[in-house]
Image 1 (cartoon, rainbow, N blue to C red):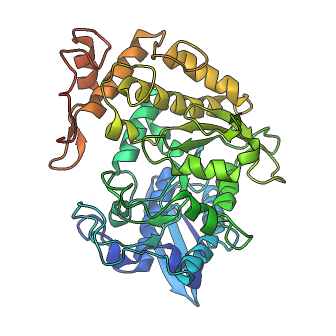
Image 2 (cartoon, helix red, strand yellow; image 1 turned 60 degrees about the horizontal axis):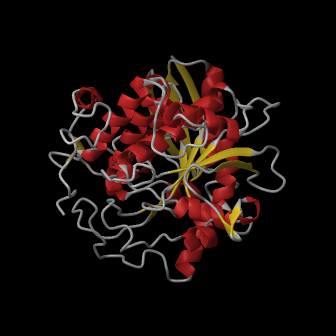
Image 3 (cartoon, rainbow, N blue to C red; image 1 turned 45 degrees about the vertical axis):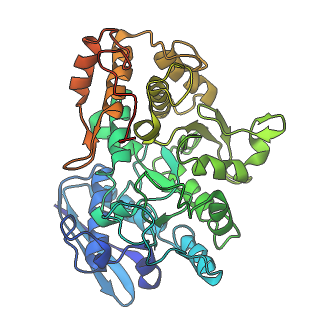
Length: 440
C-alpha cells in the first residue's frame, strides 16, 4: 500500500464548500463531523478516478487547514496527481469563487427565500435548505468529458453520492447502451452545475418553485474575477492533467437541458456565449442536438467541442407514446437523442481531434440512419433499434416503491420489444403504457 498526504486547503473556505455532517441521512451516510464528510467524498473521487483499492482515507484539521492522508494500492505518482488536482479544485481560483456568489445572494437578501417552508411534497426533502455544493465525490482528474447541469438535489447531499440518483442511474444505462465499457462509466458522469447549490428538488415541482433561474447563474456565479465560478470550473475540468499538450481541443462538453425539462444550463450558455451561437431570425439558438465549438474565455488556449442534449432524466419524466415520432416528448425520440449525446462523448474519447459536426454525424448515423439526426429514429442496426425500444420501456414503466426504479431491467425490456406486436416499437399496442402517466 502507498501512503500520500496533502493539504486540501484552508478551513475558512472548505467549511463553506462541504456540507455539514448534520445534513447527511444517518441511515445512508455514517459521518460525525466535517473531517468524515471530506473523507467520504474523497474516497468517492478516488474510486471514480479508478483508484479502487483503498485501505483508508483520513482527514485532520491542523493549524486551520484540512490535511488528507490516503492509504491505497496505487502508484505514488498517481496519488500525487490526484492530490494536486483535488486541492486545485478547492483553491481560490476555482471552487472558492462560489462563496462570493453566495455572499452576494445573502447581501441582497435572496439566499434561500423559502427557508423553513416546504417547496415540494417529497417528505425526504423536508423544508427548503440551501448549501453550496461544488462537484463532490466526482472525478478530479480522469474525466472523459464534462456535463453542464442546473443544480444538485438535496437528496444527493443526504446520501453523499450521485450514484443512487435516478438521473445518473439512467445516464449510466444510456452510456453503456452507447458502448461505453462499464468500468469507464464514472469518467463520463463528471459535471458542474450553473448554480452550485444543493436544494430540494424531486422532479415534480421544480418549475412552480424555481428559485435557480438563468439570471441567478449569470449574476452570481458568472461575473467579475472574484465570482466567475462557472467559467473557471469549466476551464479546469475541460483540461484535465492528462490532456496532451498538443491537443487541438479540450474535452467535449455536453450541455444538458431540454425545452420540456430543466432548460437552465443551455439558457445560461445562451446568455454567456450569445455572439458565437447560430441565430434564427436574430435569436441565438441553443437547441437539442445543436453542436459546435467555442472558447470558454476569449483568451482560452483551446476550443471546446460542445453538443446540446436533454437533461438525462427528462425522458423518464416527460417521455410519452405520441403520434409524432419526430420530436419530443415522443419516447423513442428522447432515447435516440440521449444515445447520440452519449455516443458523441464516446467518439471524442477515441478521436479527440474530430470536428464536432463530424462527431455528431457519426453518432446520428448510428441512431437515426442519417447524419443530421432528424425524423424518426431508424438505426441501421437491428440491435440498436431494439436498444432504443428497451430503454424506452424502462422509462415508460416506473415503480415508486419501495424506492423509485424502472419496472423492467434492460434484459426484460429487450424481451418485451422482441415479442411486441410491432417488434422494436416501444409504443406497440401489446407493450405500450396506459394513456396517462404519474397517476394523472
